[in-house]
Amino acid sequence: MRQLLLLIIITISSYKIQAQYAVNGSAIRQSCNCYTLTRDTMSQFGAVWNINKINLKQSFDFSFKVNLGCVDGNGADGIAFVLQKTSTTIGTTGTGGGSMGYWGISPAVGVTLDTYQNTSPDSDPSYDHLAIQLNGVTNHTSASSITSPTPISAISNNVEDCLDHLLRIVWNADSTKMEVYFDSSRRVSTVYNFVSNVFSGDSMVYWGFTGATGMLSNVQKFCRAIPAATLDAYASNICIDAPSIPLTGGLPPTLPGMGVGTYSIDTIVNTNGVFNPVTAGVGPHSISYIYSDAGGCKDTATQNINVRPLPTNVNAGNDASIQFGSNILLSGTANADTILWSPIIGLDNPSILTPLASPEQTTVYTLTATTQYGCKLKDSMQLVVNITCFDPPNIYTPNNDGFYDKWVVYHLSCLKNLTVDIYNRWGGLVYHSSDYKNNWDGNYNGKPLPDATYYYVCNVTNNDGSKFVKKGSVTIMR
Image (cartoon, rainbow, N blue to C red; front, side):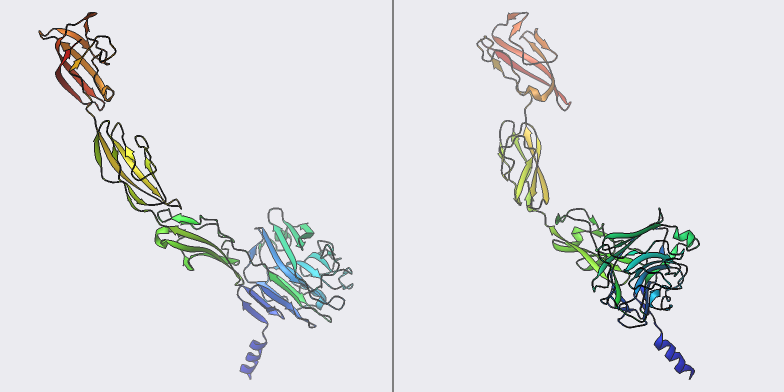
């Protein structure tokens, strides 16, 4: 007999945990985010509570769809959005449908949406009305009613119209202001310190909905808004050698009791928070942020990323050498959409694989190959320019005819310094310069030297600082 009684108690229990919500009394869960509080039946009491408390020292902005039934004149009674700290099993008793399941819940804050006029004891107006009321009291003449009854809708006195309506409740913890919107129109607001004046300093509360019917009835239900998942925008094409991409911007964030967000790459959950192009490999990939709210509803934001390959067969060719003043065809190869040699100095066309190169000094040429997606690969070669920096003539004709009138040392620009001493055949010094600039005109003390062979001793300092001494002869022939 005792076992049978226990079985009966368990069977008729009206308290059910479904996902993150406790469903009580006549309330039933219809989908992951929608609950029916009362069916179109008399004497219904239903309540749905989120089993995780929220902190009223933090602001919130909750949005719901509410449907208050299809029956107007003979429909009743209404629903309430409630903040309370007692438990998640209350809200299924009351003095009748007029209590909306909210009666007797204390301490509590209720946003009541009343669809039936109970003139006694609640002093209800004739229109469907809304108010903020404290501690389970629904009488509008009570001090616990901290806002006056206001039409629920800004455009109609009747909201038992079979339609879904948007109910939004905003709490600003800093200003202790609560605002209630219905179909995007603000209906009531109040500045009231609920934590201090209602909950005796305890800021942690449950939230949920209650609803009831009495001798009249209506289907009354609410749906939580399913949060839309969002994700930061990423480039649609990236190169395989690009840095790893941090997975960021997933919203809403993971919050205890509210929901969990996870990232995935190609449907595989990602735990390290990055997209690595090398690990992913060349080809299309999907990055997703999946948000699962407390009721089990999910929304996914997805972006596609294509990992693009680098150019192939990129080769700048072998190192080479030329004599100063000559040229050579560079022999680059690449499978790419565009190529560019750099530096461009000394090249006839830096945008082809085999430009003609004639630099005046040794140059490292880099071949950069680029695909249509901007993926680059480089290779370099060195072209050595052999320059005989000290290259003086062995004869010149300083006769003022404009040709070979001075002793010109070729490639003088590649020398840092040149000291010149020139002697006649008897060893007499006929010319000296400690910084020669191709200016000896074959004169000595302002007079032309006779045609003859002369002998030079040159101390050469190259641009790199190296030094050497060069000796030789030069013949003046006018």
